[in-house]
Image (cartoon, rainbow, N blue to C red; front, side):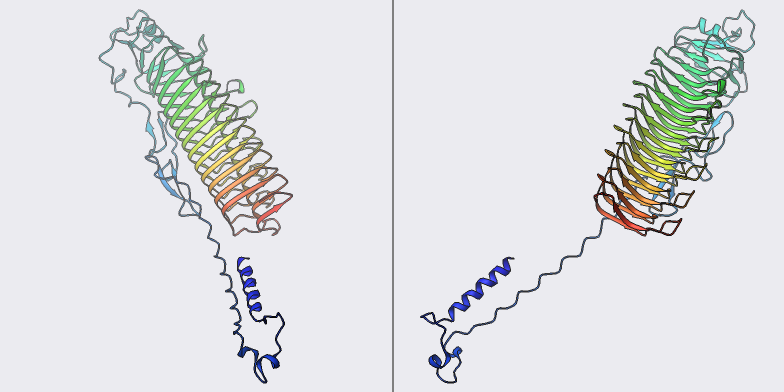
Length: 570
């Protein structure tokens, strides 16, 4: 505009210079004489140069490519695994080629290890533990020894209860090989030492006064033995001080393998809890922590239990676990419900590092309730199955009802209905370096298979996330007050719903939800790369690429890159 105004002013000045003093326009014959042009006496009038055309606008900058999740370097012993569709995406697999191994009764396969490893020491040639401390008083117990012993190696007790009654804090109770058919309650700070897991077993054949085969009510150390057969395997509820359980197998308990409650505290290393039965069709849980319990786990396998593999409940309860496996939890026998891998609720706190939850039923991990918090790094939740009878369910990770979750380097793969669910007001999830892939859908009818489903007012924040090869919708964000913020997001290769060939959206935003994207790529999805619809829905994006969207599988329709309708704003 300034250039145009300047040109007009110059033209007006030049016209004024061509006039006579009297203001009249001169006649050529009177002023210049015959055959002379007026220009011979007046100044020359030059035509103004036309303005230069404006420079063409610079081409738009190419969108910045999203950064992929930083999953490496892998934890020690985990192996790098290259994604089949994107060689630049490398995740970490806790198992060697061929997967996790099935192990013998006294063995376990821990994350990052090449194969099965023995729990505790090998069985000795003799009947007593091979290594007995020399700096403590030792009380000996031999299976089947007649009454009248004094606890010496020459005259051992025949019952663990007799040894406990004779012990003082700091003593060692050494158990022989054999089956101890008794319920054991320990209320003093002693060490109970078995010969080995295979050949020292505490397993009452009939229920007694205690709720478990081994009840710890003090800072007891239990090592190198097997427990089972009673309603509970090991009970630490409550204990004065912190109990320690090392190199122990809990097998065939009838309700709970390990229970810690009422402020009890326990440190566990190299523990296996297997095959907890379902008493009366109920329970069959692997580990239960509640009532303010404090539990620390390292190198623990909890598998083939029922109802819930690990339950952490109530305010003040905290569980910290490293190198933990929770696997193949089955449904309850009475109503075929549950089968969850890990369930935390009621304000409990859970911290996980290098943890695998696989082949559980209905839910891999559920975090629910105000104040319930999960913090996890190097987490794998995979192959969550549908319920055994109804063939429905199969959620990988669910966060509900005000739960709070923070993930670093997490893989959710090959789950059933939804890989990751974040739902309801006050619920929040923050994930950095996340992969959600290959969600399958329900076995019963082939429906669902969603990668990430956020709704009901939940808040989700993602940084460096890939959602690929899921079904129906890669990322679904719905309902008022639900918000997703994502930086460096890739949603690719979403497939149609198996049951009817419909959908396959990359990102769907609806119902008044709010989504903000920065550096996002949505590629090779179906029906719509991005769909935003319904009033109040807002999508804000910078450095967004939507490409190679395919038509809907069922009817060949659609195939939109970006679809905005119904009052949504983009």
